[in-house]
Amino acid sequence: MIFDTFSYFLLFLLPAALLFRGVAPSFRAPVISLFGAAFFIYFSLTTVGGVAGAFCLGLFLWEALVSRFYRPGSALCLLGIVQALVILFVFKYWNFTAGLVAGPGTSWRWTGAFLPLGISFFTFEFIHYARDRRENRTEAGGFWEYLAFILFFPTMVAGPIKRYQDFLPTLRSPTRDWANDFERGCTRILAGLAKKFVVADCMTSLTQHLNATDIARAERWILPFWLLAYAVKIYFDFSAYSDIAIGSARLFGMKVKENFDWPYARENITSFWRHWHMSLTRWLTDYVFIPLGGSRVATGRIYFNVLATFLVSGLWHGAGLNFVVWGLWHGAALCVHRWWTGLRGDCVPSTPVRWINWGLTMTVVTLGWAWFTMDLPTALLFYKRLFLG
Amino acid sequence: MNWLLRLKHWLEFLGGATDAVPRSFNGPGGWVLLAVWWMALVGLITLFCRQASKFIYIDF
Image 1 (cartoon, each protein chain N blue to C red):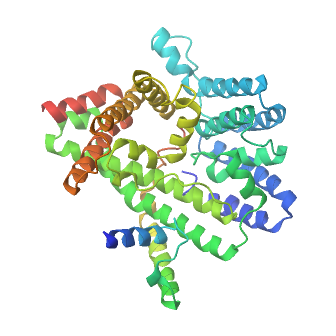
Image 2: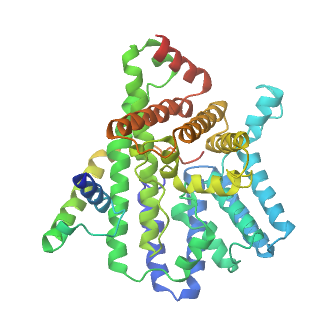
Image 3: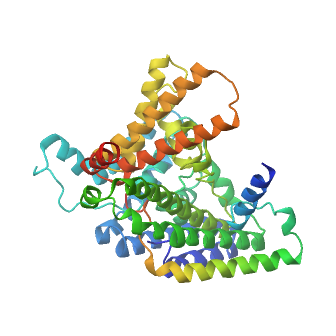
């Protein structure tokens, strides 16, 4: 929940934003860090992770300390990346991997497993900082500044995934137009809450049927509507979350980059991914796709790089085979689009063709959500019922 | 397609996603409209908040 609770607004957002605006510049980073730490502990205890989750605050403190030793070209940066990956693996993928390797009943399973709040997001920010320090693409900043970066609570739990280079200037010189920030920030937060409650949550009455029992019993014609409802729900849910995060940051006088830009209005899958969860797409491009060679390699290798990047994207979204298939589904779609664009050249499509392109893109994206929201056997049953009756 | 761009601009403004004020919004009437919009949003949120469910992207 978090963003739709009174405690978020009354205990954290308003006091932190007011204090941040009121204190001397040198105290801004400590204010964000301390409120971020309190936020992490409070919502770990009340929402995700419990007491053990709250103790994971130590990960942030350890990261902030170790990162002070990162230097351009240093091997310690690589160790920092490995450390972040190990943290993510242990908490998120241990049981998944143990189940794959040793079978579902293995004693290797971690029975008390839990997910620390926002682990998928904060580990990506750890990796970004370590890599960019190694490549000398960002300055080190101070201890409190880095702690404020990783503990900035509006974006801590589910992004948008920030970059230190973007965060530091806005932390040091937040905008001073308090009235405009307040009006725009509150409008954004209210719009986000309305999107979540009025649209996303209303779709639940349809999306709750996406389970094996209901799919097996349902009339065939209703199945696409359930999946379309999920497409609407996930967009309004996640973009609402990003709205509230960006609006909250605005109350501090800080601008966070956009995460969505009308993705469902796009006419091809490449454009869709440039406008859906943009902070993740940028992260995957910079830290997976380009290090693999990007698109400056042989054609076959480019396709491999795209598939590998979206395999990582799928796995990041969840430790399950359905997420692997979802990632590969989109990777394959991007490869097909790349191949088709190369074949077709630079001709400008006519209006009817553009509508067809949009329809195809929406079909691929919507069908893809089946892998995202259902486990593998259920998704396969859904497809079987949808296409074979 | 101009009307579509204008609609997009209005939606982005009403959603708080842009600082650029639509031309027809200027003047005191605009601020009244914004106040009405805020009240409408608060009303909708109050009306629908009882069915709230967890955000999908939390704890994954």
